[in-house]
Each structure stands twice: as C-alpha cells, then as structure tokens.
Length: 266
Image 1: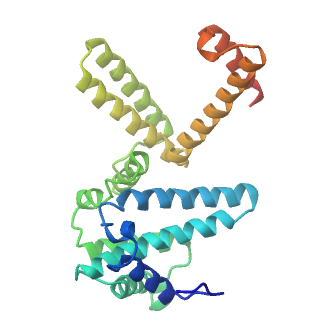
Image 2: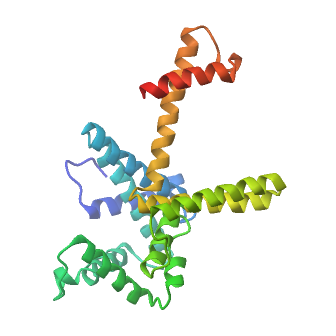
Image 3: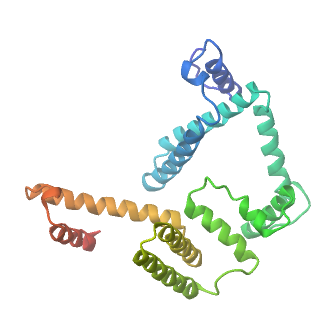
C-alpha cells in the first residue's frame, strides 16, 4: 500500500489485515488477545499522558499520536477475533453504537435529563438492566479487577454509598484511617506478614474512602505525590553533585537537610 494524503477507517483495517496475513509481519501475525493485553493498558495510560501534556503545554501532537495507538489496539483485537470466527469490527461498531443509543434516551428517545448528574444516574440504571443486576454486590463484582486498585476501590465504595452504607462525613472517614493505621502497627508488632498485608490493605482502602469525601481522585493524588518526590529528590542529587558528594556517601541527616531546603521551595 502506498502512502496517501488521507486515510479512511477502512484503509486502516486493510493495513492491519495485510500485517496479519501469512506473508505479512512476523510480529503482528503471532499476536493474540493475551499477548496484547499489557499493550492496551500501556497505550491507554499514554493517552492520559497526552491529555496532561496538552493541559500543561497546549501541545496536542502527542495526544493525537497516542489515540492512534489505542485505535491500533482496538482494530488488532477485532481482527484477531474475526480470524477466530468470534466477532468482527462491524460487530464492535454495532455494539457500541446501540449501547450509546440505549443509554442516551434523553437524546434518542423521549426521556428527560437536564443535568450531567441525571445523565449518569440514568446511565447506571440502564446498565443495571442490561447486565441483569439484582443486587448491589453483583454491581461491585462487575467493577473490573484489572483497574488500578485505588480506582476500583473508589468505584466499589460509591456503589455501597448509593444504598446508604457509608460514613456520615469526612471526619468519620478520617477517624477510620487512624484506626486502621493503629491496626497496622499492632500487626507489625506481632510480626505476622499475612496480617500486616491485610491491615495495610484496609488502611489504603480507608484512605481512598477519605478521598471521596474530599472530592479528589486518590489515583491522581498519588501520581502527584510521586512526581513531587522525584522533583525533590532531583534537587538533593544535583546539590550533592555541586558539593562534590555522591548520594551513597552522604548520611541521611545530610540528605534530610537538603530535602528540607527544597520542601520550602517546591
């Protein structure tokens, strides 16, 4: 296929078919749903990075490219499924089109939804009907296990909160963090690894609960904290170099002193 000034979706499908053909690309030919699983996750996160780059710098070049990489994953998975006689890209497009029509009855039907909140509420109600969910627990179990743990925890907590199983306010949620931290420390004293593991999980689950009451995304706060740590650590390392030191030769007190310097600056 020759390079063109513009490509249609059908052109792209043909490119993937060619790559998967017997005389196509040796790498593309052997890919499976399982082998591409991590690629899908990585590409999705790279789209998020592209969104952040656009937000911070106004450059959408990376976002455009990364969206293309996600589309590649979608078309590859659909092609593999079609080769196995399971479903095709046509089925994927039909399924998502029908879902969008069903879940927007205020646009394609006669129902009303005047606010984003009403739209989300209707979406969840329709989803429950589609999935034949009869209990709250069924809805919790449908939250994807492959989601980042913080995000999955928040989604499960929100489902419980909808039926009133929740803390009264942030103070109660914060008290639970203190309680769980104490239980972690008690488990550490016992020295039983399995108990420490369980209690530490409870502590993190409680921290996510608190983030809901503060209306912040726990996953994003941890990402921000990690970036902040890297930036501050970079300051320590650069300062050490200018003073002729290597970090491994510095005491923790010396490093702490530099940490406190940058903490007041950044």
